[in-house]
Each structure stands twice: as C-alpha cells, then as structure tokens.
Image (cartoon, rainbow over all chains, first blue to last red; front, top):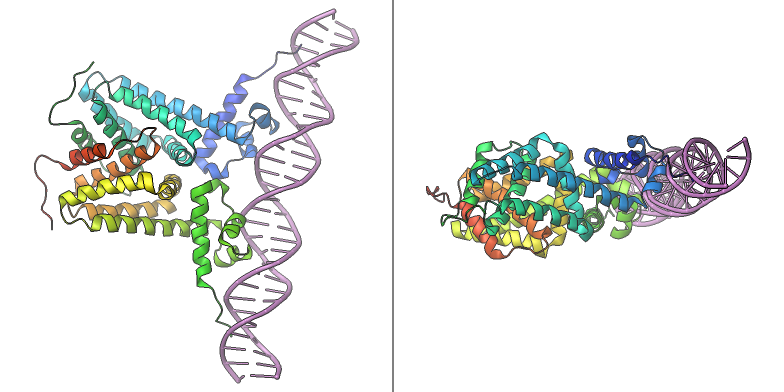
Length: 188
Length: 188
DNA sequence: CCTTCGGGCGTACGAACGTACACTCCTTGT
DNA sequence: ACAAGGAGTGTACGTTCGTACGCCCGAAGG
C-alpha cells in the first residue's frame, strides 16, 4: 500500500541548505520559507520532515559537528609522532582561519547557541572530547587540554584580526605549549 | 522654541535593554517591540532615537566593547610587573568564564557577527588592539599576541566544557606561553 | 481493472514584524 | 497671554513569519 516513492535525499538537502543559509546570512535571517527556496523543496516539506524550527536547527548543527569532527579526525589521526601532531595542529589553525570561512562562521554560530542552551553544548562537548582523544595520543592530558584551547584562540584571532599573524607565530605558540621542560609521556 | 524636555536616559536605556535581550534570547529573537517593552518605552521611540535595527545593533555592540575594554584596562592596567600581569590574565579568564555569563554570551554574539560583517570586525579590532597594548607593557609583541589568543581559547573552552579546568591549568598554560627561554624585554 | 491508502504538497490563517508619519503637548520667545 | 515649533508618541500599513491541515496522486493489493 504505497510505501514506495519516498525521496531520502530531500531531507539531506534541507539540512544542507539550512547550514548554507546560516553561514551566509546568520541565524537571525533563517526561516522555513527561505530554507525551502534554497533547497528547492516546497514549503510543506518543512513541517513534514521536521517537527519545527528547533528540531531542524539541532539536527543541522549535529550534521555540522559530524563534519568538523571528521576534519579533526583526518588531520590529527594521520599524525604518527609528536612533531607531526604539532604540524597537523598548525595546519588545522590555518585552514580553518583562512580557507573555509563557512566552517568558521558556523562554528561561531554554534558556540553562540551553546553559550546559552545546554542542548547545543552537548554537541560541543562531543567535539572537544574527540579532539582531546587525538591530542592525548601524543601529549599528556593537561597539555592536550591547553593545546585544544590554544587552537581555538589562534584560529579565531587569526580569522578576525586586521593583519592575521603568520604561520611562524602559530608554530611558536604550539611549541611553547607542548614543551613542558620536564619531558612528556611516550606515544602509547 | 521647545528645546527642553528631552530625556537623555531614554536612549541609554534602550541600548541597555537591547544588550540584555540579546544576552538572554539571542540576536534571532530581537525585535523593536521586544526591546521597547523591556526598556519601558513606547514603540515610537525606537525609530525616533535610531534610524533602524542595524544602527541600533551596531551602537549597542559599540557600548558593549567599551565596557569589555574597560574591564581589560582595569585588570591588566593594574599589573605592575610581569608576574602580576600573568595573574591578572588568569583572573580575566576565570571571571569571564564563570562569573559573567552575560559578557560571555555577548562576546560570542559579537564574534559571530564579526565573522561575517566587516562593520563589526572593526569593534573586535579595537578590542584586540587595546588588550595587546596592555600585554606589550610586560611581554614582547609576539608573546603578547600568542597570549591574547590563549586567553580567548581558555575562556571559551572553560565556559563550554562539561568539567571546566581548574585555575592551575590556566596558570600553567600562561606560564608556558610567556616563558620564552631566551629572556624577554624589560618593562618600559 | 478497480479500490485503497499514505507520503507529500499547496494554501490559508493568525500573529508578529519594521517602519513611516500625522499628531499631541509642553516649552519657550515675544 | 498667545503663537509656534520641535520632541516624542500612537497607530496603521504592507510584509513575512511558523504551523496546521485538507487534498492529490501514484503505487500496491485484490
């Protein structure tokens, strides 16, 4: 009895369009209608696929963190030793702050929501946890935590600064944070 | 010719109410009507005092950066030597990330706008410039820049983390960034 | 072939929005 | 005492919003 002609891509397209719209115009200018137009779906699809604006946003940002965590995994997971990890971190900072404006903007929008609503904070927790797991393969837990925060700060300041700092400053900062003086644990 | 009965506090109250509303509900839920209600002024006052929503927001965030820069000035300006500066930085990180939720949220909202619109980026430039001026009284320019970024990252991660890190971790990170090994410039 | 049925859509409704602008009323100059 | 003019406001207009829901139509079962 008519179980057939469903279009599973529809839902995905709506979520992608939502993120694109947020990235370009900001959460304040997001609406069902605008998303529908951008995704090329009828307005009715909005309430059909999602129970409301809130659920739609949460799911869209869930997708986004999946993507960004995958980026972290790819970059940091490939590092074989401590020096490669340091280089990977520097790459991460510079690619986030100059190449992909979209990811940067979406990250900020997510942090803004997370600063106010615990539901979104859960997404950032998972993100932080995952990146710490990677960093802890090469550095002790305390250092990993400090380095994680440093990545955040360097990326943001580089993206917003009038004259963004060069790669050498990024590398130097990473070196300082990861050089404990009293040595550090070996790679597991 | 009736130059008299103007109420200069009205304008200020509107700006304050705007920031309060943004902090509590987010930019997406800000409207002339809601601000007017919160400030206890008639709707007509909105378009009388401000030419539009955009001008109002820009002015409100201008006020906010004035406030936050004053906080930085007070904390960092009081530091007499390098060690006091380090302690002041640690205080700053912890007070922003736990005491004043309002400032944290507003900062995020501003960064989100700045990431997309140059008009708001000008406000963040001035903020960064001022804090660097203070830091450069105690550290060389490169270190000041790294430290500034570190403050940002530590504050944000501490505010969003499931289990916020302790003060000792903050202090340790600051020490690592500000300990160059090869000494550093004397206080001017 | 015809009936049935549910995935998916067009449309309509009430609420809220930004903004303009005619108006009121108080202060001030004469 | 009166005229005048500008500060400040109430209201109305056109638009856009989120959401609900009755309807359509193609596929599956008989």
